[in-house]
Image 1 (cartoon, rainbow, N blue to C red):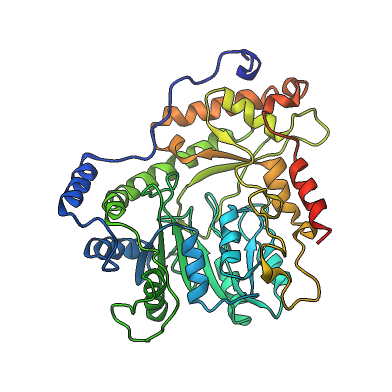
Image 2 (cartoon, rainbow, N blue to C red):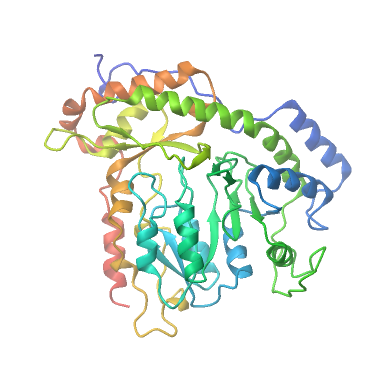
Length: 439
């Protein structure tokens, strides 16, 4: 076996993967037509172009309605507002997700409560959610993460038993389906991100889906400065801001929606190939298949770094750095446990809802979600979706690189951990939470 690239050997791959985002000539022509129309904004909301696009997206996801919004974090905040979540209410979120899932709750004046994730899917664990419910709980935000779905049957049963609203965070799940139901069509409202790395993108942006006309109208009102919805059958009046998406972005999204099915199928096919190629690689555990997924969609391919107990092996971060050195883009700390993240600076001083009406302020330094922490700091390895949209040979290169590293774990374990280029886990977070104990 050749020397590891991280130690000066030749990398498995030197050519780039397929570029992302993808676009067609028709996208450029559509944008030019939109520019020449001199109608670039998002008013009246939704615009005719947005209405046509959203009908197509709603149909894809099996929802009755869809609406565009400025980004996939605001979409969660707006959803919570429409669902009746108020100041000081609690919203259960997974501990292993992008910080925005939780900070959107804070922005609403509500309190995020962290539940742990399932070790085989990295999605919200329903039993952990059950233990987190209190009289203050008003909603749950499951995240369909990377390439797996939350157990929505069990979660919806639990939510209905406690009269809780469910806002699906589908930032990774465009085009995916669980037991024949599209992402974002199972809970009360679905929230999608259109940020540049996502499966559909307009650079920035978000989409909302729902099967409720009442929520559809209320979402329009909040997004469109408080104006009444187009149909206004329910007559809800709510505080709104301008969260409208521009028609320039919608013009891009039309093509993104057209390309999604073909790219989705290719990613899923190549993900299956990669899973088969990684079987037997030392230190690698692929995520178990999830039978409930009836339409797979792969935002990132995730596997678990699990070297045999008692055998010499490097830390996950060095393992990931070694793969990257072989010419394979990847990440380990793609997400942290949110309550340990430096982007989640929530204290009673800057978030009054953590203290008002409580005997003791909420103290996130006391959070402990062991599966999430293991995933974030020891176990998960993330490969990017653009590595799956090229040719089979690209996938074989990914597998060859991982196999090369896996066969030399003992040698890699003898190297300086600083080669990983990652700070020691928790150094900054521990200091910050020590300070917070004084509040």
